[in-house]
Every structure is written in C-alpha cells, then in structure tokens.
Image 1 (cartoon, rainbow, N blue to C red):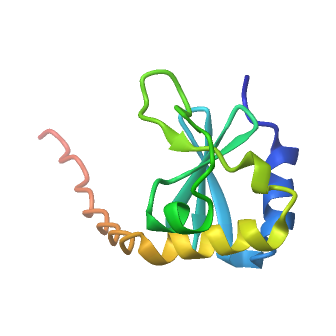
Image 2 (image 1 turned 180 degrees about the horizontal axis):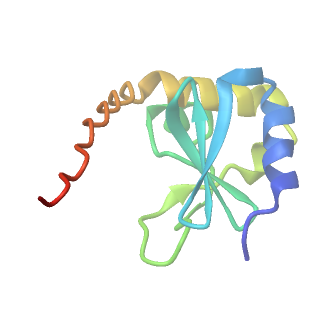
Length: 117
C-alpha cells in the first residue's frame, strides 16, 4: 500500500516546520527532509524516523520495524503524530545529528555530435 498524500500533509501540519520540512518520492514511497537532510521515511502511511541518539533520548519506547521488506528496523513514530511538539522536536533533533547533504555535481556540458563529412 502506498503512502497517501494526505498522510504527508498531516505530518507537515503537525510538525509545523513550514518550508523547512519537505518530502520527495523515493522508491514508490517518500523520504522526509528537514533543512535538506533526510530524517524519516513515510511508508505505508507510517512515519519511520532515522535511528539516532535523538530517538534514544526523546522517544526510546518507539516500536521498531522495517519500512519495506529487506530493510533494517527503524523506529516508527506514528504514536507521536498526535503530539505535535514531540514530533517537531524529534524531527529537529534528528536533523541536527544528520550529516550535511552532499553538494550535487554540476552536469558536464554535452558535446554536440559532429556531422559526418
């Protein structure tokens, strides 16, 4: 089952981070970003937060399960979706622990094919 766009809108509304919180389609589901850093995945209408010290400190009792078959277990933050302040803090603290995104390489200019001749 794919994640419903309304679920992503609910996450954004609850986290109240405005333009700092974004998402991008990834392998049929969604990666969730704060300030350009991946902090979670939305899969099958559940929010899987990247494992970090922030989760251990702020929400140590979150259940663990894989976001997709074959993946390692991630903390599932569904129970925090109705606690806006706890969700926001978890996402911000997780983002603070994630590395800066790698700069994208500039595309190389493409050469036009030479006319035979």
